[in-house]
Image: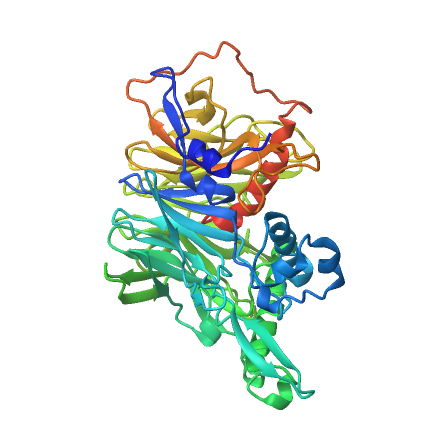
Length: 569
């Protein structure tokens, strides 16, 4: 069955699920579902405004001027080469070109167009505004390049947002020694924190800005204090390599911009390799520390300060200990993580959850039980939440914690079962925590996860899905943020018609609509006087080896893969 995308989009934008008072929350699907293949809800303020990120935005621009339409592959696969070459691209050929451009073989190709995978949006009810970060207008594309990932991570009550964005890919023409004219693509910097005020992006710059430096803006309070991390030093060998790019003899027959981009690629590959192997610090080139920046509401930076680490390396250890601030409350106290020796063993460096309070860096997790930990949020009562990692039956599992910074005590509340991994993402000023936890105890493969709600005051731990109406087609897999009104920004999975990169319904070879699991950003709104819906069918969570919702596993894998990229921890 073929359905108009417009009609389908209108249906989604109006879709809410509630059943009078037969539930505690109603689900409102955010209109970003019409903007990309998958969407994720990130943060919410007290006004109910939500920052959200779309993965694989629909209909990215295609730069036909730089595509070789004499390619045997394109001649063989495109349905109308002549029309496509002049920009008249039909749906099938747009999908083919998108897959061709974004193929991994072209990821670092300096002559290939680069297309962003992530785009953020601000949502206020049915109104939606794109957050464009540092993107610029490309005259050939007659619009934004849409080549730079832009990811929002925090929002305050003045609708100021912070996040991380890449520089857009720009073009430089170059004539090589053989007389061939070439067009290279390059970036002016790597990831950089930004502050968005009324649609204008202001850079959140690191102390060390060699080659643009690196920074992240992870959270912002109502006083416009921004928590994140930034480069404080760059190693000398890397500086030498970059300086060599200015010498035409040293860099070879390529433009300066391509030489620098090559260094960026080598650097990123090295960092990603260290992360995959668990090497700390992962970044030994751009040395990073937690930072707090102070801005005014007009976007002017007033001050910045480095926050330090929990402990310095011992004499003779030349490794650089990094730190990062993930969240900040309205008291100006930040939380995050710092590199530290594991159990004072100088051979092992791990991350440990910390509080950044003025000049102090305070740890509070016992590394005898938890070998790694991260603090993800802190409320205005100085209650901190996050997670620690420990081995359970020989397997690393995360467990969420609640730490009272004023009272100096930490608890790891019970979740679904002993070996369930759980992560706390946020806490409001009423002591309500939201996060995600494994609800299946399968020993092999990806475990099914659901969003949870934990009340610090009553010590009650609840699967958010039990607070929805029985007729809800959604499964909440992450509780990402919560305001003092109890409104939750969350991520859900729903099984329905899928879409391709053009935004149209995906069809199989016979023209039938393809149904699949979709990840969607949602807002959970409390129902006044609502009660838990009696669904009659009671599901008991037990330790077992089999039995999970198979249709959800691929999409949950995507959620797990993107968590580090999209969210603050």
